Structures are given as C-alpha cells and as structure tokens.
Length: 248
Image (cartoon, rainbow, N blue to C red):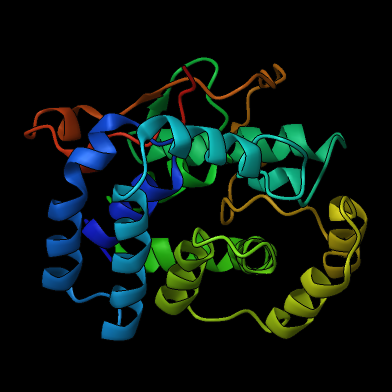
C-alpha cells in the first residue's frame, strides 16, 4: 500500500467536496482500475459513487455532506470522537498521533485535528504497506461502524468504508458493530463504543513513546487545513494532494 493512489482517492472522496473533486472524477476512476488494489466489484461500487457525485451540483453535494458528517456525533469523521469522546484520554491520543505524523514528515496546520479520517488516509497513502495496515487495522472497528451507520441511512458514502474494509480486512467485532448500527438509537455513539473498547486507551499511533508527547493540550478546534510534506508538494498538483476537509 506504499504510495497508494487508492487510499488517496478514498481520502479525497471522503473529504468535503470541492470543484476540484468533480473535475478529477474521470481521472480517479481510471487510477482505481489501473492500480488494482481493490477487487473489480469494489471498484465498480466506487465508480457508482463517483457517478452519483458527478450527477449533482457542487452546492447540493456540500449541503448533503454537512448534513451527514457535521451534524451530530454518530457520523463524525474524527475517529477519537467514537473512542474517547470528551475524556482526557482523547488529548493524549491526539498528541501521540500528531507525533507519529511528524516522524513520518507530515506537519499539520495549527487547527487541524490529527484523527480526521481523510487526513489519516492521505498520510498513510505515502507510507509503507506494513505501517498503513497496522494503523488502519487499529482504526477498523470505528471505520466499520461508520460504514454500517451510513448504509443504514442509505448513503453511498458507505462504499468508501466498505472499500477500506476490503483493503485491510474485517475486525473480529465487525458483525457486532453492524448489528449495533442497525439497532441503536440516534445518538448512542460513545456509550456503545465503550462496550467494544473496554480495555486500554486507543491511540491509532502504534507504540508511540509517551515521553515524546508534548505537554501542551492539543487545540480542539474544527479542521481547517493540511500542510502536505515537501516531498509531495514538489510533485505535480493533482486531486490526490489535498484532503483537508475545509468548509467554505
């Protein structure tokens, strides 16, 4: 999965839609077929998603996106929202993940949260396959739950989460999470996830050294921008180079 165009495409499709996304859809479709990271049926499903995006106006896409992902916690793309909620563990997990990104050459803008899933996918698209598999494997339970919730709502965005599951594999609790999504109330996110993760704090940062964490609290403000490493900025700009989740 090193330098994975498939992960970059999923990241871009999962981020807040911009005109550049719509302009790049034909190129994305071609790249998915060429890279062959996903089985053909999965590629066909993503092509269906992209065809649906192309058939709508940018305004409608943005309005639908905000209604799905920005109103309430159940579909938040900030992964630690589903693991730690507002607990103190969330701050340390943020710091650990931020340190991991820095070690890999990624510096975030001051107001960007490191647990934003499209950002994580963008970062992992530049990393060795083994590292990407481990980090996504740690996050897969949340990814499966989000995909199941989107499927329950009849949203084609669920196909992005199914594609990630096809790339990495299903977690042991996948069926339990799907049953949860089918039966839970409208805002049971944190309480239900606590039943799944009853053990140690989850960081999605591998074996990060706690001594490397900075003491200052990481700012808990809305996502606004992503500073891509210089090695990426030096390459020709294309659809795969931004996954910042900006809002107009």
